[in-house]
Length: 207
Ligand code: 0O2
Image (tube, rainbow, N blue to C red; front, side, top):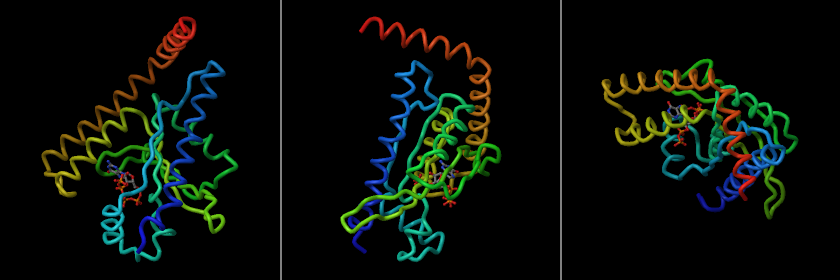
């Protein structure tokens, strides 16, 4: 398998989608509105992770393009839970991609405590041999959900997927705390938004 060649369109898709989704922030800023997007990151799945997931899921390597939906991965971080569906709606309305699947791990969190909204999209990339439609997974989550997921992900890596029970229990408690933090922030949302508008106006005036 020539990984560089196979993954090149995925890398292109990640670069393009990062720019496109980051663009929303600028549009909101110009319109002097609070952006539902705080920041955007993206990555192509590293080859060892691809091989591990393919083995775990029994996916033949020649079917990766149709059966592994997160070779190209984008993450959109929001300040508030309510922003998540605004971002999802903006993604659904785009005419440069097709949404093929949505997974709501916010309504129904994973057993681990993981919360996020996943949108799987089919995105066309123009390659030297013509157009290639590739799958990309966009994960939309709050900053608190992202904090939890990042920590849990590194612990999973450290313990090679077998996190000890006591740590798992603590992680579940931490997930509960992150959920409550999101709830608290939602309740003072209006106040925070007004403060942030004053702040960005003040910065603009000083420039
Ligand atoms: P990485 O390193 O982020 O690429 P599965 O991966 O089998 O659970 P599925 O159906 O392939 O699930 O896709 P799903 O549910 O959309 O989840 C894929 C990705 O969501 C994961 O990619 C993680 O990024 C994230 N995710 C899902 N569950 C959890 C969780 O319990 N904890 C954390 N931290 N992240 C999660 P990868 O391939 O696992 O890893």
